[in-house]
Image (cartoon, rainbow, N blue to C red; front, side, top):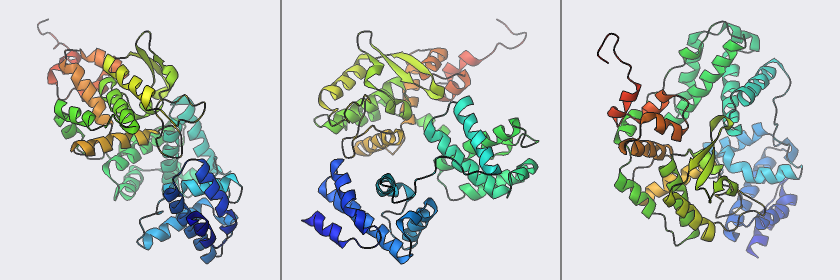
Length: 404
């Protein structure tokens, strides 16, 4: 009755579609309280469209931004980000009520340039779709900010680059700012190689000051890792899943995206190995330590339930809607485990550093650590060895004319 009343209370141009949305949520396993919450959002969108005198077909991506901006301006904290709009928009687009989100740039010189850049990122760099999307958003913002027409990019100056970074990163967090400058440097390298810009301006991108070195120097102590693992309640399904995720990250040094990409078929239990899909579509076969295998097996026996039919993804959601965990969800698992353990919040990459320093302290030479971490350069692995200066001796070259 409560859900029926909520449907009846939704007015405006989306009123005819509210019951279908409720049915869709129920079929995906959402709890009644969650359904009520989403129907409330549906009603708020409908009322906003009515106030703006807009039909659903006019609810474009730009107007979605206007809706969430209006909520932020009003001091609202719910449904105040584009990400929070994904669920209702997905349903409305699936039934053709709201225009579909464009997958490609519209025609035009700038869009042709960005389309070529997308091809470079996918074909030459082999980047993941999520990374390509993030790079393209920053590339488009930069091109629109510094040149009204693509031809203007040929006259770029270092001052244009630094000015954009200052404006784009002024209010950003350190991780967000680092992503912005990384994406911008990639674009500038491409523009120079493609002949769009005469000068190589990637070196003009300012560096983002952070606390990376200090974080690595502190590292993650063994007692903190033990608290992190013990905080996962393995009496519950979600606890067994989170324990397996943290164990994989800490013992094998996997990235969040690599853990999210694992499937049931990647584990060779007979030979004790696991296949990892790394950066650049590289596949690596790693040994599976006993404790990691036991954690994953316990999760498979009594934790991996409710997975979508036919899904081979290893780690799945425990709440609606069913599906695979994303890399960002893997990060959330780590942050929640840190909070339970009373450890300052950190991301999954610190566990990768923990795995590296653990191998170094155990006597593994730097080249072997680089092989396990799947680094193409020893200099990248050297960054993980800051807490173990002795390990850097493997990179030192003999002094010319000195003793052998």
